[in-house]
Image (cartoon, helix red, strand yellow):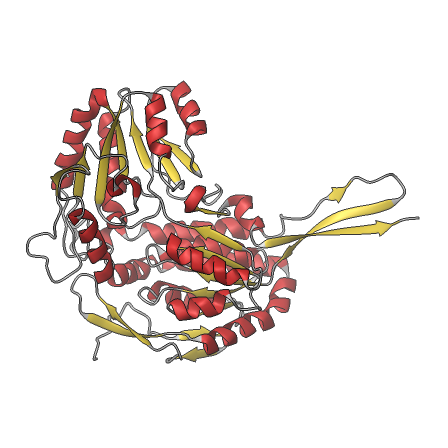
Length: 487
């Protein structure tokens, strides 16, 4: 099938060491522009052979990268950060073509990713071991922090640039080499990143970029030359990653899904709470985000007031062409996502799961792309799929609660535990609930934009391991004890 590649998109290819391949043994993927459904690129996919070559290239580059002067390594990461910022406009355009992100809202991803590279550049040369106390005069005992080797990095299609910053920056800072596998439906951000990393002076083989589907993912996660796997995606695929990694006992970091609760108490700033519920729960990535607050828990005393504000605001959202400067919600990323969201909403159409307050269908006049109207359900049954399952679209479920204890019980009553949000002016309540909420992170009166120095990750079926701060760096280091007898 013929396709017309927009100027902003890099030519689809695989980058392995010094080689750039325009075909792969994994076949070809037709990338569709989410706003129209039309094919805009043919993406070559890696198969087992290309995975072998990428791991071999990373393994060959590892000794020199590990032993590179630390000042030079730091300079390279800092240069990458600067180049990401300088290329912000192009990364924004790529995000619009790649997953339909409104161009008006696509810019912060580059700022976040650049911050992560700059932050981890600062860690280079500062993370060392420590001396272990032993009986005086008998021995000298110390600990070394060492890189692992080759890191298999599997990123998602939603927010790939941010994921690159969260995973690749600490991996490189620690002295590792990387095999990056972006998904077949979102390879362009990763490809542009690989280009500018090379421009910044990153040696060939330190970063290898191989778009691929499940075939490539399976080959990568079972490869004996991989020292660690870091994966962001869904739970179903994560189980396959763990099963594959078990064959070689390769350690894994998993950042998975969420069904995050956004809890509003009567003493909160209700305007701010409603604005965040709309912006983070519906607008951001059109609801296609793991940490987004897709469950809104509202105290019964202010329930009607908050619902009125949220529904009124949702109805005013501008959905349409992601290139229009007035658009705040673009399409979903793929036809499969549109089908998934449509089926989830249709499954709640009988009203037993909750009351449909707005949305619930594709917008009028936007049938050619993967658009879906911002959708809000009220009085949602806590046991329903609306409250329990990750829909990954612009669907907000609103639940009532009457006490702090009930709010915590409702918030914790899912298989997920990635994030939780809380709106209150009561300092005691904020601290008590922050401790009681079963999640990897809690935000009070705000929506954090993934701070580079803070640990990010989930509990329960939202994954394990952490990204960010010293915790994220340690995920890519191994600890070695050295004992020297002095007698």
